[in-house]
Image 1: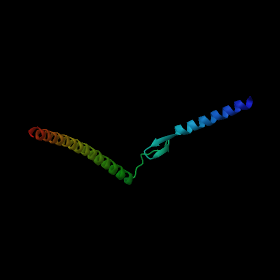
Image 2: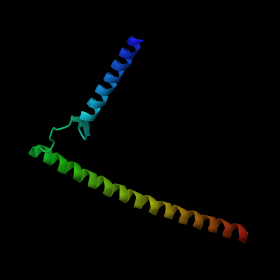
Image 3: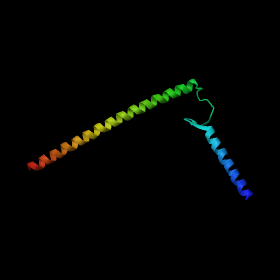
Image 4: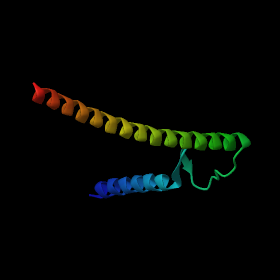
Length: 96
């Protein structure tokens, strides 16, 4: 019985150790980072890359918006063409 208690106690200690380790590690955009480390020390290169990334994200968002507008315009044009073709086919069939 004592060995069961000892084994259970050791398992609990291992679980607590894992939980403590998980709590000490926090996620950042660059992967896991131990708590207490500061990520605010940026170099000018980091700042330039961040600005470039923000700029690229803005361009991608703008292009996505334009592509949805173009797709919508295309869908409306196709629908209009189908209506025109179907009306023409009905007119031609009716005059014969």
